[in-house]
Length: 583
Image (cartoon, rainbow, N blue to C red; front, side, top):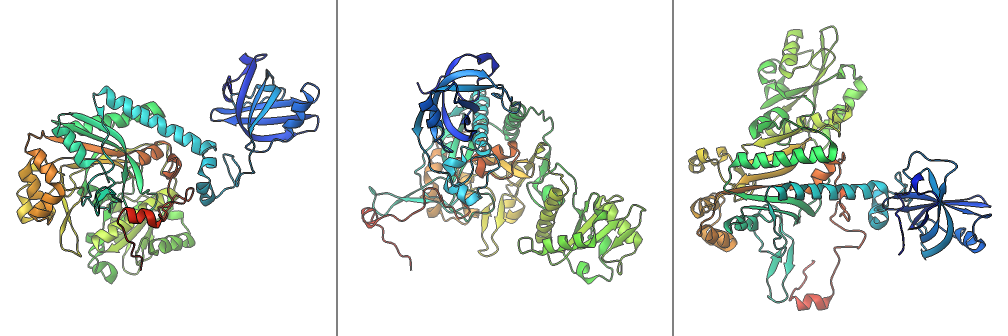
């Protein structure tokens, strides 16, 4: 066998024991008469010692040829280490090597295999298999495994059954673009890779599986925004004979279980917030509630003065940033420049310093007196020592801009502690949203989401006011999961397709299989999907998901390690009956 122990398990209790280890050379220190080598595997590091007076001469000389990342096997005796290292579990011992076998030599790696490496992101993605050897990436992947195992354990204990659904499916309009796969056996026809297993999990409920889950790959061919991947992993779940409350209780329980088992944290409260309240109070539908800075709408206390910017605005809204009254003019100007960036898009920003003596100093003192500014402070909840930042303009756009500023300020002020977890449910989303360019209604979630029963009559008269029987789980300002109660009868599903602009023929061609299934006794059902990549990253205290994915794509959707996507040869294209038009 290649090893009797791994490189992380030996300690003082093993002294005088004969052992065999195998791994990679982390580094070596040659002192002439003595040579130390750090041997690394997934489990840790063990120091090896080659002593000119105690080690076979051939073995001693061979040890001098070892380079970084050589793969070696050694046999030797565990001895007490003279200079102990209390920072690692094996720091009290070392191995006096008797035999050395070089299993594979290695060229010098393009970056150091250290926790703090000298390699940039691009080079590390190209040599991802080397990056995985580093503790930060390796530990992230091990943590992902733990999360997945706890999810499987929790759901299995509740009688959920894991069922695999197909990857080669029918292309259907569900929002993002599909990845399509040509079929050689069916000339001119294509499969699509699933954006989610949505229709299949509903069919499993029709099939009587009652409680389904799957940790499943999903695919979306869309322009990648920050920290997105074209392929991602969902914890996908569906339940029959349930209402919204049943589903929320199950997945509150799952979230509590993960926080307790993986982080040792007990979370009692899962607040519930309507979509409308989230948008009005935080400017987005996934608010980070670890800190305050709630929006204060200032129209009533800022308009009808001589300041035309506010008088002409649909919305004037502000936030109170704690302790920021001490900001210098340079710091304030930098923030104004920040909100003017194209990514945010504000035309400017007004500020008010709430001085410690109870007075106010603002950039619009010419137009507003101390009593006016005191009203601003009251509306925004500002206290002495705070700074009020105010934006104005079209309501939706301005809320989005202020939401971005709120998050930026929280980051600068250290209010987004990754070890604090604040989950909540956002509920009562709009069922439909209007595409201004096409003038057509689109499903905010997907076409199978059930309307709130009490809002059904509004579909014909005021579709924008219809609320969906839908819900999102938000954790620390990130949507980690979402779902809905589904439509389970053919008539309602046909009505939904009608309001989404499908003709009967289009609905039949795209989703006839589902509507047919509904005629055979579909139970009331609903579900939820968690984004595993995002959930793992947040639980791991990180902002980016890439280090929790073994082989991620870059921002262009490319795998630079294997150079994919890539062209295929003419013979393959001919076999698939495909001609390229790249002009």
